[in-house]
Length: 314
Image (cartoon, rainbow, N blue to C red; front, top):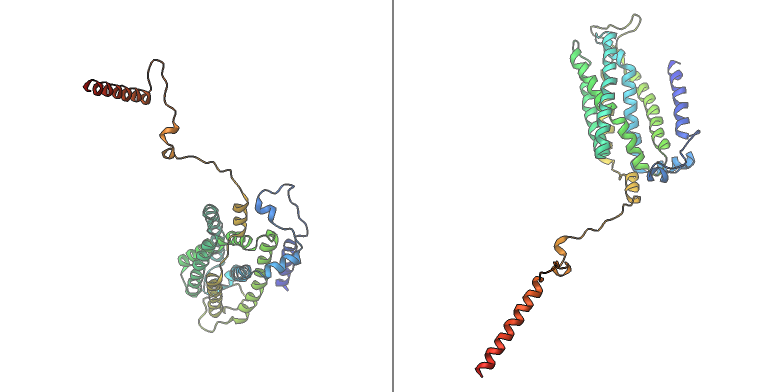
């Protein structure tokens, strides 16, 4: 019942955002990419997205990532309290997760905006996230690892959250000229749906702890064994990351459209070495004879003198 209270408003909001029921655009497009972006009906845009192999791979894999992180955030307190960590420490780990995620998104966004390496940044970030999640699944089952868990949660936010805005840009690039609202909104809808499935699967795999209990959970809550669930969560994260790294590849269609449509005037500059010396007019100074004319006069005088000497000899 409580899960449905959160699912229904979230699903309705995502549906409205994806369907673009209310849309406002400026009278003049701010760029060539914006001018080429279609404002087609939702169903037609959805058909184009489904036929786009690269977008489907990105949407399914990153949607699973959204589901994994949603489950991690919702179950963090229950996972840690079962192994003797306080609620205050769980709240600290959640705060570090968010703060470092915002910092990572800022830094990675600046880097990608300058280099345009959307695909490389996404694949590297998800690989690092998967390795960090495996470390969390193992370390969270140990007692007294507060510093290690705090560092792992910080790295999860740094690697995982920072990829989210880059993936949204990458979704627009690989689905152009479909509208940005449809391509980005559909990923979040898939993420919420996959998050619900992952959450239900994790809850079904948890069992009551049979060994010695170090639980600090609230009274009335039985300590649960999250070992299998966490290993499954890390396995899903690694699986979808491998699928995206191996099979995802796309051209940057929006950037290509903007660079191909923009024309800059070409200025032809001639190399000074290609200019013949005869093309340079000689300098004319009053009272001075140009070098070429002086040379001609000297040759003429020499010819006349030679002629006179030969005539005298005869």
